[in-house]
Image (tube, rainbow, N blue to C red; front, side, top):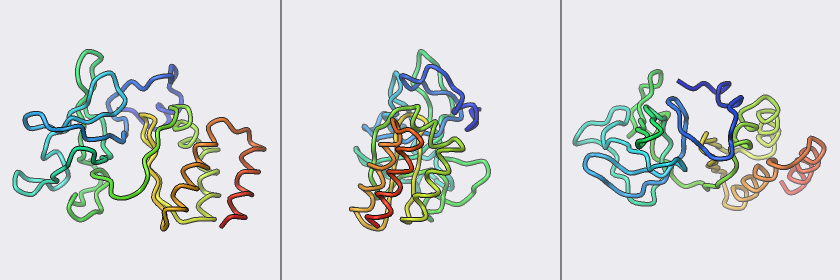
Length: 189
């Protein structure tokens, strides 16, 4: 299983390659048998079983439409086959239908593609400090997928787009540029 520290120190990050334990944000492409096909920027589309959600049964499960976003964990991965995803958690037993589950469908918000090194930065110490300072300016939710995807949700659409653009600029910014960027965002708030 991949931990955050393993992901942060992962090399060869030009293209995402799934590993068991990775936290990913995916786009539902369609259905295939008892599975949803999910695009996670990997070699092949990933598969997610219809009722592999916390508290889901054959009758009570999410019905995902094509184009829906999902936050999931890579259950198994093989270089020659589709990765298999899960939305079940070993430590959070809240049902998917309560909206409090750790994994599951993402509602509203804004999805953005980014580089895998930016995801690694955001999950590292300096990245967490940067996000904490942004959190002092705006209230927001952020999910960082190991697969080069960010999902941001804030109270207003303008704040959501501003936050997403600010976070994406952190990809190529130096420490001084990040400080300047935070100052500009604080003036806009």
